[in-house]
Length: 160
Picture 1 (cartoon, rainbow, N blue to C red):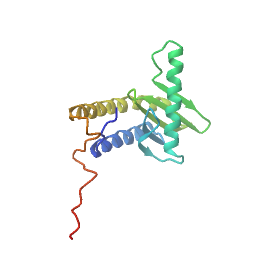
Picture 2: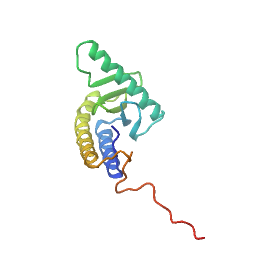
Picture 3: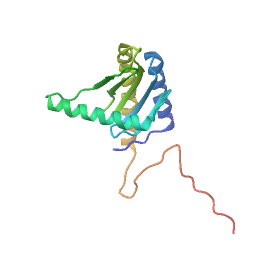
Picture 4: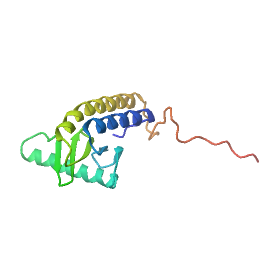
């Protein structure tokens, strides 16, 4: 179910990602949905973040299927170690993934340590967004509801 993420929510997401980035001494981190859509990104990227997001989601979904085949509910993290870069992927919710990219000289322990409070903060935020979404009345004739930050504003008719 799509959720309405407001500007204040995006500011909080960026703060959480920025804090994780600095504490874990990583290069880049982002939040994506399970379909690979890039929700937010922080850090220095030399790669296409949208493509990374989509590929990370694919990797994570494949690991979920591997977990099921082995009798596990899921693996909640995936780690890939490279010669120069490492990537750590962690489930935030069933629909959201946290992806952290750091150098091979970086510390996986720091990434794991500081991803835990980041995930908790993001879970709380998205629970609040879900609650706010549940409070919006829906009817058969409305496909979306604009609150506070109106995107589409009616322009006055030109004088005749």
